Image 1 (cartoon, protein in one colour):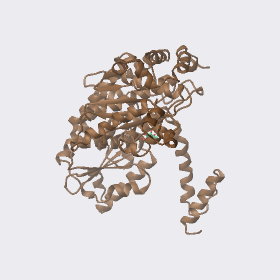
Image 2 (cartoon, rainbow, N blue to C red):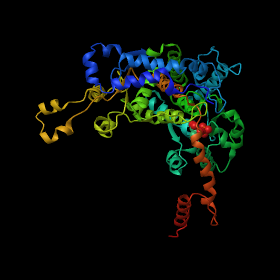
Image 3 (cartoon, helix red, strand yellow):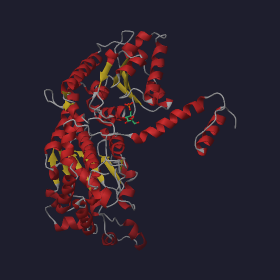
Image 4 (cartoon, rainbow, N blue to C red):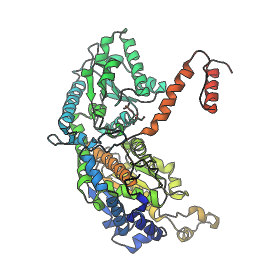
Length: 547
Ligand code: F6P
């Protein structure tokens, strides 16, 4: 029996359904023309970010109704439960306390009655000490040489955050160190990552929350072999060239990494919410402990904003609600995140796990199947590259794709006119999407009759623009936390659990069953689906050189 009021029976849902009928036919061009104050009013400044949300298909009433929906679904109470360490990840019976990872020293966040903040800061201090030793050259490899190359081995949340943050903050990184990232079980990934590296000056960070992920353990074993080969099989080299980041001490020890070289985190940190835990060790090695502290401060600023700001002025709440508006009322299926900052080139990939592994769910917290859409598909690429690739579809395709444009007033690298050109493009794109170009306008340009329909831009395509000052560690922290809390807001509205990921299990299990079928020297008896059996037989046959 359901204990939660079904979403679609809430008064705000019904009101939004009626409101959608009224607003659906209204063009953004008219919304701007009829309301001269719109652009000034529909902005929020919070936690160091500026959001212009005026180019959305909304009126003030829409915001009021969406906020009412958030209130009726209990978002406020949910936020407090998360910050207070309640076990809101109910299917795994875990608290969700990534916000404690960036709580300032001296703060108190209770988990099962215990303040977790001192443990968080103790690990940060160990990470800082280790980072200083690597960065200063005090940490020596097996043959007495300093470390020059760092290879992060991990996948999913143990990879995407570290890669994204390394790329995003490369400007601030120690360029005398090189960083590489290995995630895929495809051997090419490992071999390319260690290409040209000197084992005597290489450090591997094995990142795995569980320390039993097939890809990571396989890559870590190959790394161990690669290292030991260089040191004639001398296992004492491992302590100088391997550290681990995990919640699982026992498995780290079993693998052969000294637990003294392990940086801990906790089961109340989800993998995709862990880039600010010890999983961020590579980030700290790259930018140094002080700047890592600034990154955490940025996260914390957004946490405070999310927890304390009224919903209508709350960046993550409002952006989360707008995504619900498009997803559930307009039936828009995807959302593009388009950073106009080359250093953020991996940000959309990072967001894909954060958003889709979190809210790609179809069962509510009380076990019922949802009768509405949940997580939209997130995707994107940095501008302006995307403009010359898929923007055609965003401008004139049959599907409407709400866009989040992210841009910065100051570039990190000055080069002639480049930054003004970049910014002109981001401002132009959101205007073209919203306002479009009418048939009359196209005709007035003297366009040939038969080309007119091809050159019309319908417009009325929604977007948000986030304009920040400059991409600093702090700003990156704010941005990541913004999307973490957008995801939280969406999950709370849809009544689902954004913190488990049961959907990845079945494929993992089947792969484990198929491995022996591929490696068995004798012809195995196959018990899979007939298509799978055929594929396995064909693979085995061709691999053996039989046609
Ligand atoms: O397969 C999905 C997943 O469990 C992610 O949620 C996680 O980030 C990733 O695998 C890696 O897990 P681990 O850090 O335990 O190796």
